[in-house]
Image 1: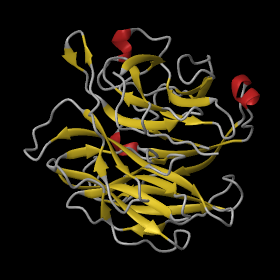
Image 2: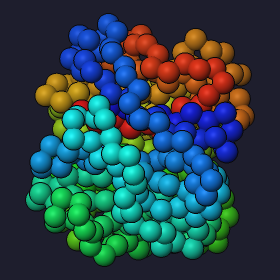
Image 3: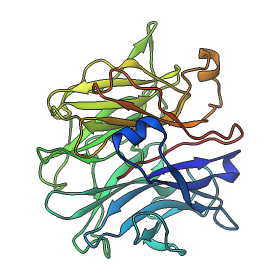
Length: 347
């Protein structure tokens, strides 16, 4: 399943849910069947629906928690977290929102990540936005399959600032460590800077958190690269791969050999793209990676670096060598008048 948002402008942000009917690797590399199964339109008092995540419950249902904006369509407008559910593997969905967490930030709450922990609990992560000086991820735990949620726990307490944690970005490693990758854009003074990336780590199922040993930053032609909206995937060999949104025409990639403590220098990847995040996940029971992003491999650099970014088409590609190369893949949605972003994938 995939999610993309179509936005001719910020007032027309629409959420799509796609069901990939054929998910074998061979099917992916030929022509996957894509079915549009849910379209969450904005409306009066609800000008935007975006940034969500899936979790499979123990009874087989799929829960989808997303950000429903009520105070406007900007990233800082009032918003709550609401849910829909599917009982048939994503083919159909409930027709009414259920409140999950009502707004508890001075601005809003948004950008959902859901993670089934090894102890069986479900962790819900989201951003609590108070100001440009204080935007940090928090975590709530559920012990009853998302019926109720515990009190919010701050994942970042060592330094105030504006930290961006995208939706569908938190993972728990085979070792049990939880990794929360964030891009820090301001400190407590609220002055906006080129993004640098940290990973906040927990080795006790979210009870305590700490920052990793080295921050991640990059340069191009002697100038800092604004690293944004990091995502992490655990490879079959235990190494971690991080994907980073940039403004220089491609996704950057870097790697960690020590569970996210330190990272190699981020480098441009073959995933040419606009200023838009990419999603990379492992296909279950394989070492094959699936990327979903705005494929600009046939576009000139001037187009890829255009502002505002041109976030179409929505495409996929496969890697069999841990992200070094990607096959041609193909489009999922390609309306030239729409933009597709903040997509997620689950199997």
